[in-house]
Length: 254
Image (cartoon, rainbow, N blue to C red):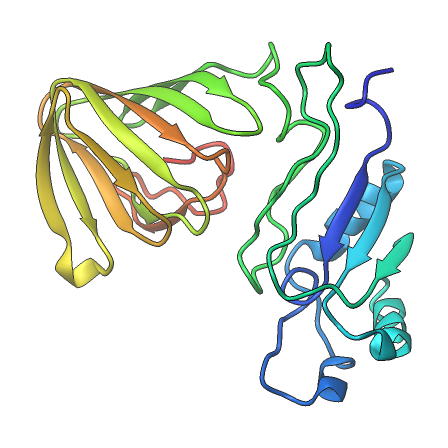
């Protein structure tokens, strides 16, 4: 049995991940009366059903263990172990990988504070692309080809028809670089909807789009371009869409 088939161990933060992160208040006020963030209970219960070990981690002091355990019990959060007293700095997980293996044995997932746990399915989201995963997807504005999808990055080739456009959107975590192969595109980009810059892009032009940057690609001519990004394909917040698609449509991300 490979490592990816064995029961996994999930290390999951509490404040800002399972329930709201509350700063600037007395410590005792943060230990009761919480409401779970979206999808957290469903995610924990699914991991438990799959036999995963669930290790909850927190920067809360050891003196707050009893209150924290009581709140977790009240909210019905199942877990195997609770680690208290972690520092406030970056958390880094280190694990070895087999010499003859091509799969990572540990992963790091950053979620947006107080937004809950999104559509993560650790049986598929963070492994090399499966053979049965569609590599060509038709879009209302054209099509995309999924070239590579793994735990580190995604590479797609996109074709956009003239006079069509993707949604006006931003990402909370995802970072992407666009490289134009052919044709001519118009990029709308900026930090707010009222002050978007317009750029025309032709073959050889590139742009990197960072989280919370609003953007939209529009075809001036039939165009092809590469998109290289971090692996959070689900991370799209639509602000406007010509084709009236909803943010909740997990199968159509652009």
